[in-house]
Length: 282
Image (tube, rainbow, N blue to C red; front, side):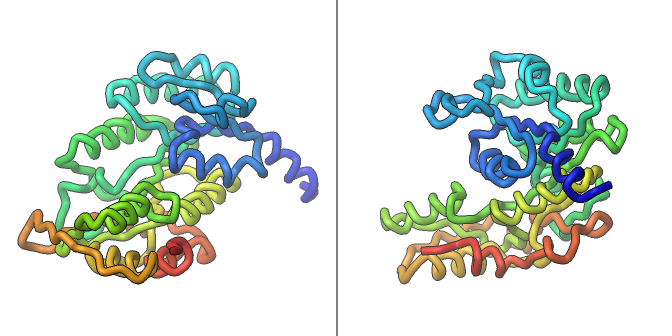
């Protein structure tokens, strides 16, 4: 196929981002909108989204996702939606019905929390999920729903803690520092991390190459939470913050999702230091 023809075909690919007004959803929209025919949903009434013809208002608890799907007729759905847990499950049930009836693939943003009951080692793509948290169990329930689909219909994207200048975590840390409030660190927690920029580049690759299956989208290496946060604070500025060291266990525990079977190309792999050096600024 000629290169120009392929670019035209990709531009015509319709992508719908559920939760497109949220932190991650909007970052994904900004990454994809110049390459695909990209749409998003928003919940709260904000002029920037109301005036954007590519965005549809969608209340997870009140609206049927079928209505949005019928309007857009996407070939790709990216679920970054948040909100009422029961409503999320119902929406994804309807999405799976749409997937079975249409030429469409769903990328679901899951979480490292699907493994939060395992503490002694990092988790890989095909490890059994088990969670002690309500949030983790929600993600597992939706994952299990998707795993019953043909693999070419779905991508499960497990994501660790997300940092980056616009991220809620970095904004919170900055606010604590400015207010002279303690910044919580977990000395016994070992994790991997990502940034909004790194994550959206990886998702762009998966959508562009029609990759499906289970992917762990985080740094290739691990770091203690306390060490990482202290390096982040040093990067933000010359501060003397108060640290509150929180011990949930006497032993080291892992909250890390590492890739083993479904590794991305080398140019999309990164270490936790890259997140600090290139995605955290003063």
